[in-house]
Length: 238
View 1: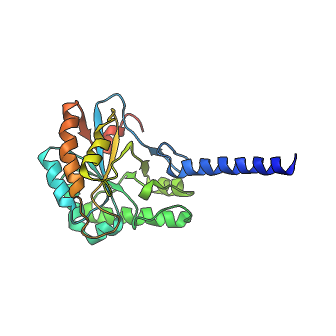
View 2 (view 1 turned 45 degrees about the vertical axis):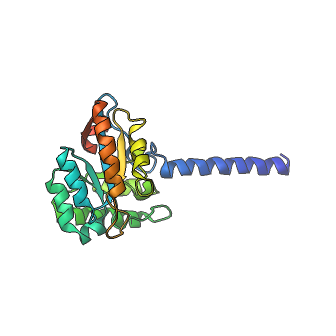
View 3 (view 1 turned 90 degrees about the horizontal axis):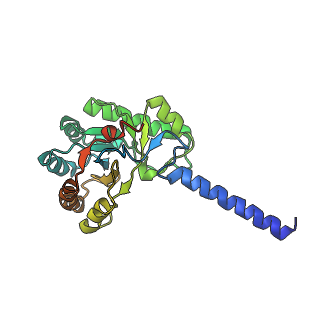
């Protein structure tokens, strides 16, 4: 084989390998690094609202909104935030919402060791259980990034990975665009990812998220959707 052809062939193989790794790390349907799902039962007209990065000082506003509309949601909590605001974490559990694990300190997992990944998940489990009395069964990776060794950590802690069908991008978009992302292609079994925190940032502002929910939730209910927790929506798929 000519040198030019060999280089071209090697480049194509590297590109393919890179694309495959990128899918394994961040593809919402990827389960290569551990058991993971990204939607629920397509046979029921149900949606799951999920909220990442909490608890935060803004979480009580969201709890008020959900309680007024009789909606149960799933909160993927960071252990460090639970440690800082245990009473708010407990208020989420006491309100009947589901609690998931979102790591301890909200790092990207790529290029970290299996021991690091396990500590992040295990510390979050410990802090959540201590504050709320609940041991999570669901896990969402920060930034949706998975890595080698995550599956072993999930297995040790009996955690199912949960990605999302719809990302609201509510940390950067105005309410109108967040609501449009949630509603424009809603399908049975969608898992919607929003945020009641911003990583480990204190005092996050979530007004755009709340305004977007105020627009989207009535429209989705008018379209016949009901709201369930992530575990409820996954019961026929996991």
